[in-house]
Image (cartoon, each protein chain N blue to C red):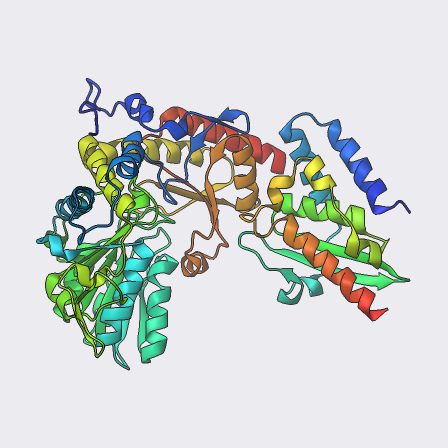
Length: 140
Length: 418
């Protein structure tokens, strides 16, 4: 299992091959389309990350000290961003997820999705994933 | 001081949009490496150089606190501030300048009425009637008032095209109705509502009327006297003016009878340790130092709009809307939301297979600014059974070429998303 940073670095490398914005977004959209669906029972308000425009659901489990996520969104680009985060954080130790620095967001040119106006953007998703990890840490 | 060009028309009688665009410096830039196209005018319009210069001029030469200063600059600032009141009076064709109250915007104007007139006159069991397409700013203050007073909010329904249904109006606006509050032009759909009919229906039962003109003032001629509206409210920033300034028009008799809104300087006549008496209109409702600079610049915005002429603006925007609608309907899977016979300035649309947010993000990458989401009209979106729309909204400086760019960007976005 690669570390969070090793996977981030690989994603940054992949994105460096994509010159145009439409290629980058096509890549993210593709990830969104391929993301395995979240179980319907988790598509409820309890698992929803509150936001203004699109809906995002996120669920996690802990197995042998490692955290596993499933997620979904009704908007495709956001779903692709969820897929990217899951790709990086899935199967990682809860401690690492809670403390990681997700520098890839800036490096792949998706920093705008962290901004306040996209209140359902990456920032709230990252926060939710870290909160899950923190909760598991206190459990163990 | 200001040099507003008098000739905005081409020989064929159409607007010289290229000439107008020269007045809007912000339009001449690239966004994400593409020519900037601004189609979010229903959220806020851009400001002509004349408005920006009025702001700068005020701070460079006239800035002083108004009304009680005895020095020259205070007099100049007061004159400029009060000149805007006169301009707004003519702009709305109000009977008296004292009927024009400056506020922070449409939202504050409505809240002012709810907090003062509403608190005084709404009682348990009374009914407040609003339309199915209100912006939250003309819905939430009435819900809050109704909760405080145990009153009831009733809704005028609409059809699927986004037109209000008036055939059952006598069962909605009844002797229990104390207030009818309705949006003049819908921000989400562009529908121009039959407010004259609503005002007449309200008058028959003795109800007071408030018209939310936020989306109307930049497109339509407004005559509060011939409409007979009791209150008419709008924001400066949707009228090519600055943010942070708006207007409450109210009939003198109503404004006189209403208690003050906020207490403080300016709104009092005399203050003792034991109590105070209130100032006369309009100052009774303008506590504290007002937003002087933005009020002054609002005056320039009104001058600008009147110089071009609302009729010319409306004609140009109709050409844009018709063209954009025609082009949009050619896009596979696109459904227009808001197809009222009488509409202005707004093209809202949805796809069954594509989320509005994805459209908004990808259009932005192409330099096109649109708005996506519920447009602060959640009850309306609920009525239409959709979470939100993508909305292009047009202003006097927009062009057919920009619509072509936006439609091209839309096709590109759909290719990526489908």
